[in-house]
Length: 355
Image (tube, one colour):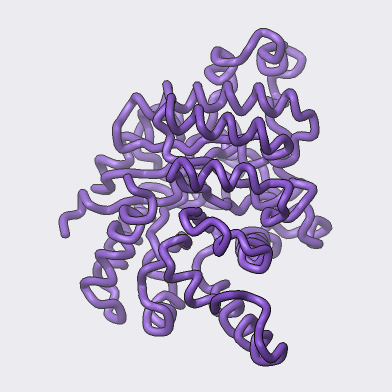
């Protein structure tokens, strides 16, 4: 397999608020452009443990990050250069500031902001390079409006799917309140991606260490989400529903495999229609990983390699050399077969994302 066939299932764009403002309705544009509000952005704060990943604050990073270009980090042009220098053919792009979209309480504002964001990323990223595939943001506080915007984003803007915020929403993701969104996604044949982000709502918001929070605030909400989808019956009710679980690695699935198997045994007859392993290998689930995760060979033997796909996280924690090294490490992995390496680096994501 050629290096150009590598597919990144979870990269990031970094929003330019002035650029995004150009796509906003006049009624909300002043939120982004008023001088007294310029530093506030247009999305809520992610939490009290992150600092924004923006050029002005790069000196606060614990290490010097090497970007792919001299342009604005996380711009369409920068990410296009990243693809060329890593040999990655396609990257699915999640937001940076927009990770906090689930915290927006003003539903009408969320509807307008998501629409502007989707127009913005379709124009400033999707059209820059065919390898850039930004996902949509949808206003989950209003499921009917979210379903409508999802259809517009997929059908009119050619975006591949939408992000589901892992924290911030008032109800767990599998709750029937949100089912209209999942029904629309299944009907469209697009995917949804649950993406880790904020540490609020997880019981760890009083942590003072970013490192301590980081151990938990990405994988834990992914566990919450997939358990709710399974036990609320969504994957069984909508066999065409496909959901990716991102930025938490793959090791969290080991704990769920053991815990859910034990629960099935204890309850004598079980509470789900299928075992977790069946859901994970059904084609309805994709789990982002780094390709050289220590737990991946074990999971490949226990489950098969089908649910797992390589993700870079560029330009957040992972810079250009780190991404290049992860790809090399995956190709050189002694515990994975050649077929498993190819599947993780491209094949699984291609099949799941239908790109």
